[in-house]
Image (cartoon, rainbow, N blue to C red; front, side, top):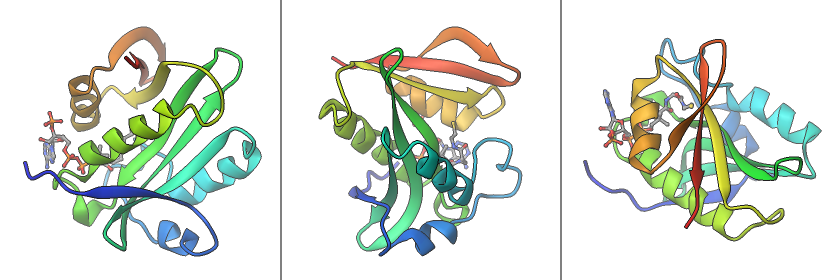
Length: 152
Ligand SMILES: CC(C)(COP(=O)(O)OP(=O)(O)OC[C@H]1O[C@@H](n2cnc3c(N)ncnc32)[C@H](O)[C@@H]1OP(=O)(O)O)[C@@H](O)C(=O)NCCC(=O)NCCS
């Protein structure tokens, strides 16, 4: 699959409408919250999270949020999505690399642990995370399982 040059840009007043306009493919609503809902949560957790647009050049192709859990402590990746019309082009894999590079800068505090949850039926996302070294922790909540990675 072709590797894409992608970047993350913080969600701001310049680009939040583009995030609102991203669309999941049919049937993916059960896998992830839409950016509209995610950004509402980002407001609630605004002292410990950073939502991003995923960009190919100047075009927003997806969305992802990084949130710091002070209690563990660990970094969590929430609501990563690529617009349904642009999936399968390498954007998701490239975006995950950029997210991990951001987390390595420890923007909110110390921790090498990165955790996320994923629907057990979301085989594409599970493969993506496992290929990057995420492993199942054994924790589960209904149809969502937890995966974790320790940054080297
Ligand atoms: C999961 C998601 C972020 C991946 O983004 P993407 O840009 O489509 O993914 P990529 O093109 O980088 O490919 C990632 C993997 O999926 C595979 N893939 C891509 N398109 C595919 C398709 N149509 N069918 C099956 N597998 C596919 C790729 O081969 C790749 O596998 P690999 O990592 O084992 O090599 C994206 O599909 C998405 O937004 N899904 C809906 C929201 C979601 O489920 N988010 C994750 C929440 S945990």
